[in-house]
Length: 591
Image 1 (cartoon, rainbow, N blue to C red):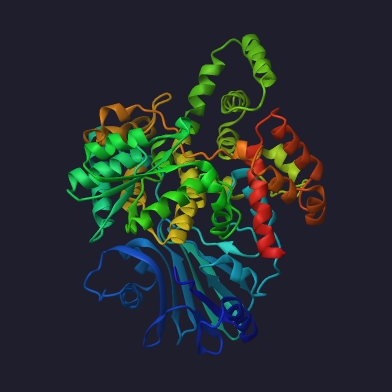
Image 2: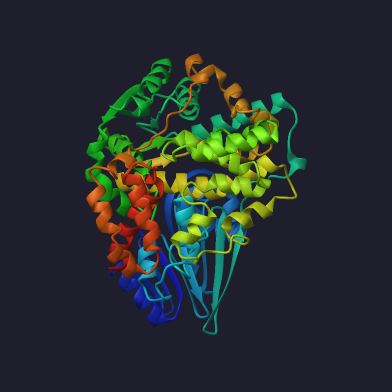
């Protein structure tokens, strides 16, 4: 990314924004500023960051993306975005009309932030300079804080700052300056369709279309020279590796993180896939104590607080690929959320099984589960199943998204200063297709927008940019997403088995021993860190004096969390990691 920014509006605000970015702005008109490298053609200015995978209209000049964009703008107007595919952000200024358009690609490969008032609108690829430009009062967002301490990340359109928005994937904003006033409209230019009437109930056709779309997507994302794949040995990365290497006949470098701790080590499975597809395989054996020295860099690599601790191995593997000279890397991200592949999507199955147990026995079992120490993943899973048994479908799915704090604990932590759960981002997105499709497909749609964009793509994108690596996600292409959301839920999931049709479509590239292997996941030992090498730093960051000064958190509640964790009465590492990361970020941004 080139740290582009644009502003339409008053000169004083423009000077403030330019000051936040440094002396890198061009000023084609008194009330139009543009920062970073800009392409100019007659009265149009264009900035572009990212990669184009495909131009549908190749008759237009396309030696560089900005050249094609300006030509397509003249030919198609705002609809030009539907004639290209890539991962990008762009800004387009019409100097004669004093119009500004900024947009993200169909699935938000790169972030874009914006703020607007009566007589200005500004967009930026970086969040902090926009927050520090004086355009809006710099203060924390209630919605952003609620998202963060509930989900561990902040999905668009919320940000950690009040008055600053994150542009959602597949969205654009068109603005015009006239008589000193700015009018603007945000709209969605692309979205996946979830309507039940668009489902294809022919299994073989679904399988064929999914395979064709995946192969086409992979071919578009393979570049001249070295191409890599982050290979965990799971279904998704194995399919990407096998389809690219075997079906498309491309030479690949594959990268795996191995761990000294056997409980986290997936490298033997990755080696099975690498041997099957004859890749040039690289394994980095990580001692997690080594990662302690990287934490400050990792935390600072995000635009806003981000508490998914798998960012640690994500940074390490991106750094490893860069060190091997491979800068274009494919990943299998997104598959779980479009093919119902992770345990969270089996909650309805487990709840239905639980409800078959007679009520008196179920009540006794629930009491027994509550009596178990809350210090293991197994006990927390049992608690979730019992809690979800009494919930409506929406509340159940919402609870499965809350990987940090549930509603009651969130209220306690933030002293009641939380967003309205009836109209927050999760509720709004769930309502979009509630009456148009089945409940599981609607859940996958919400998770695509919330979890994939807000967490997975933010994590991989931030860490890969920090390492200088360009990552590509073929399973999130327009073609694959369109095909996936035409597939009925019964073709994706049955009982506690997910990704059924995906596995079937690519059974020829998945070694049999990997087909049913359980996933271990990349999970650094944060719980033990907070009882050992990071405990003193944790106590300093979350001391009562500091929390009282911040006036955000209930200090008694936080101290109780620390005491429970250190004494082994409960594993509070998830929320403590979120608080720890937030405190580090806050020091950088406000102190």
